Length: 165
Ligand code: HEM
Image 1: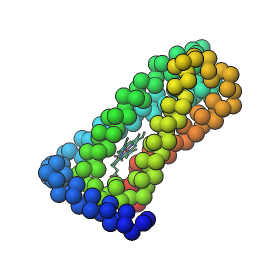
Image 2: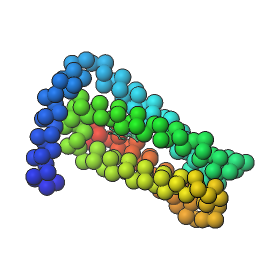
Image 3: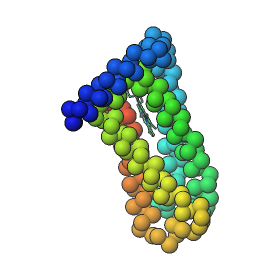
Image 4: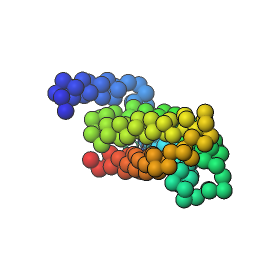
């Protein structure tokens, strides 16, 4: 890592750590487990919906419903879960900034979150305009499903790995 960036990141962590909010989170032992519970509930909702959409895109399940119908039903759950994950994640960072921000696995996790959001948009945006869009794309849809699956699972793995790296 670039030494100037490392130093800047360190001063950001020291500053966050000194704020009243961080001190309050650190002094109430129940806050982190409670916020982690919210984070995990949002992960469960997001992953369940992601699996339903991607299995339909792969043609494995839900073939009695159109892809557009499956996406209409499940993608709002993904868009509702993401802000919950963002806010709960920020609270966890505020309580222990150096643990996440300085951790390269956390940095990879954020890159994967951005990539997973972009691929979800790439899948849903054309479908909203043309419900039959992916029917004519054959293999591309399957590649999107596999990459999306891999990214979301990679995010879960990275999320757990932060604690051990
Ligand atoms: C949107 C921005 C997000 C931020 C800022 C964020 C931040 C965090 C932080 C700070 C932790 C605590 C890590 C530790 O100290 O051990 C964490 C845990 C975790 N995150 Fe996220 N996260 C975000 C999104 C996601 C998403 C989208 C997923 C998966 C779909 C995810 C999955 C996990 C998992 C599995 C854990 C471990 C939970 C545990 O063991 O208690 N996160 N996250």
